[in-house]
Length: 445
Image 1 (cartoon, rainbow, N blue to C red):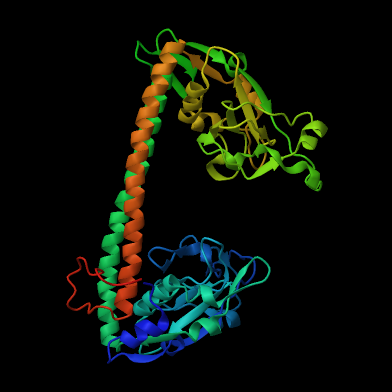
Image 2: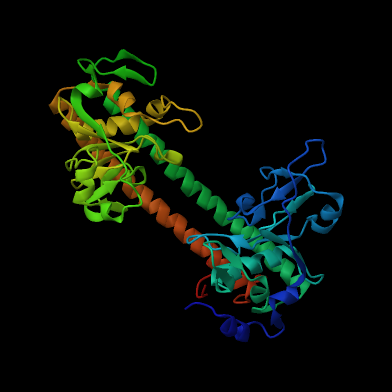
């Protein structure tokens, strides 16, 4: 069952004071963005939502940008240790606006105009208030106070602050905050361990792919390619263009609706995620195929390389699960020689970093179809390729199971963390008698 404001306040300890969240706050004021830094030593940090530690609920000062703030504005907006910074504008579908973090630094700083500086009332511990805001965010109180008109979420702080709440005296607030500091730190360390294990599994599998697709199982020799150090005995190097028919896609005129929502899947770089490509965001019509000669249907089983894209997208590979078209950000490799698609798929994944390092272009370097065509790929005999891909598929499957278990563990720890915070600040258990183990058994979040 989900806690509602009415239900938990009714059941809160009788000695707790009933009221509203605004009773815990001394003041709340919007921040400022200031001007361009003057770089004379007078600039101050400006904390944005991008500078939030969203797990530890703390402001990250070191990475915040420097801004020029005039003396009058600085007096009005200066953050003090113990203030909270509340995100009032921004957010997104998966990360609603309304998160708050604690400012516990002594460095001179302000918060941006998309945030608000919230000062706790004199009878309220700042750490306790941070946990209250975390519980309120988890319960959806901030989401219910969001107004969205232009694609940007805006928090109606007045509505949020008017939410009903109950709180204990200052001494008990501090006990609750001390307890939660210790318990959440313990949970966070377990989560870091889980996340590190996921990273290590990824690194281990990548190294396994590299070894299997270059070293082989015979005497190794130098390849002459810096990022592909060794090649198995008897393996020959061939250009990709010798082994695959390559072709890139194109983008139909976006203003013509008759080109879209047709029967042909249209793969873009965001659809390429190192795996079988079955679901794509867009499709094109037969008319688009007739009007654009570069827009062709590539057969299921073809290898697709993302030539450019945001973040880690560039250099990813996938195998078409259906006959599909491509946009200009992708390149299709259709087998035409002695290398199987699956072997090439694992080879590209193993050497992604080396391939991406060859991207060219000003600003945002990209891969090109010609660069892909000139890559030199090892070609063991087909029987060896099948053995290698079989081993890689088995190891990838077992690695995936381990990763799924760790990710599930991480999700459960995150849920436990939120439930623990909510239970403590709503009085569902007395932290002074809590053992720190299984303290959320029987509580709701």
